[in-house]
Figure 1 (tube, one colour):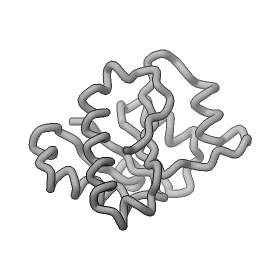
Figure 2 (cartoon, rainbow, N blue to C red):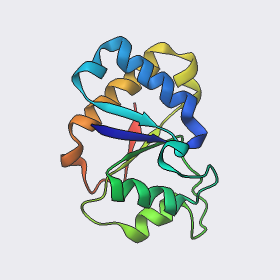
Figure 3 (cartoon, rainbow, N blue to C red):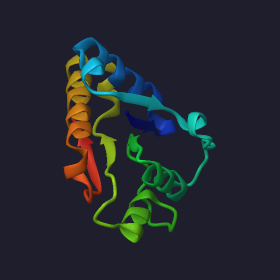
Figure 4 (cartoon, rainbow, N blue to C red):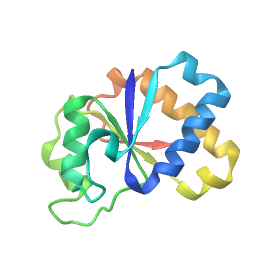
Length: 133
């Protein structure tokens, strides 16, 4: 079962995407589990590097609404660049968080894309970021 760890800034969005997976019947076909920070003993103010490394070490996909990309040493983007290997799991980023909540078609396209990513995960190792939809 593939665990998807929702970043704290997009928990509601992740839930809506998982509801769409259920509506579309993907939850029976592709075993995925949605988790939030407390489920994996992360504080909500965890640094980007801590979150990313936890995901990498445990095989979780991080679903984010685009964590800050400022050029400080703790940013997710710089963490990925600094710790990159050809076997990393990608960070999955929701392209338009507002639309997930207000556009059912967009939310379903995000759900389908997430399902495709999970199905193709081994071939996507080494990719730094993927976007939904």
